[in-house]
Structure formats: C-alpha cells, structure tokens
Image (cartoon, rainbow, N blue to C red; front, top):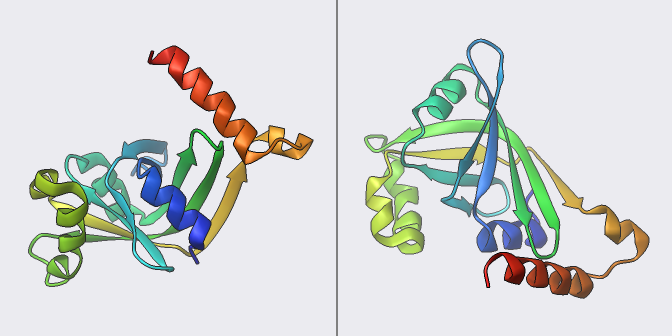
Length: 151
C-alpha cells in the first residue's frame, strides 16, 4: 500500500522511472512525468509517447517505478502489475479527469493511462541518514547544490 510519505513523493516529484522488460528479455527503463497516486493501492501515468514501454508491458505486465525527492534524498520504489487503459476503454473516463486537472492542456495528448497496482512499496533513503543526517540538513545541502547548477 502507498502510505502518506509515498503519496507525498509522487505528488511533489511525479517523474517516475519505469522499469520493464523487452520482448527479448532485456531491461528497459524510461522516465514518465505524469504520475499520480490513485489512493493507497495504485499509481498511474498518462502515456503521451511511449510505444516501447506499452509494448513491453503488453508482453510482460510487471513493472517497477522509482521516484526520488532530490532535496530530501529519499524515494520510493513501487512494484506491481500494469494495466493499459486506452482512450476507448470504458474505464478511461473514470480516471482521465484527474489528469485534466493535474496537467491541463498536456492531458489532451494522453493516448493511454497506465495503472500499476502497488503490490510492493519500498522506501529509499541516502546513506547520510544512516550517519545521523536530518531532512533539514539534506534539504539545505541540496538546495545549495541546485542553486549552484541553476543560479
């Protein structure tokens, strides 16, 4: 199940890296930037231009998605089975209004919604937490680092 911390990370940093397996058995990872948490049992993204990921999921529907809060240096991994929901599927309109609200005009380009059941959720944290670093310290450090990159 997705707890409050997992939902926060996905809400604030909806860019998830989706890991799938190609029909040839090769690993594939692709960023998807339109994720939403669908309550406690699923996440989903609006597919705009991901024919390879759709093909992979159609062949082997297991997926892992990784989300990272780059300032707190914490993240979440969500494992589950993906379901492809095309625009002509009756359940598409049940979910689609959430993407219209969240992504505005961009949502009109969505061809499919990809729902991934949250069968297993693992929290991630960077090693400095093991040494006693606090979230406030991590946030200050990475705000400084990002400010150097983007003055």
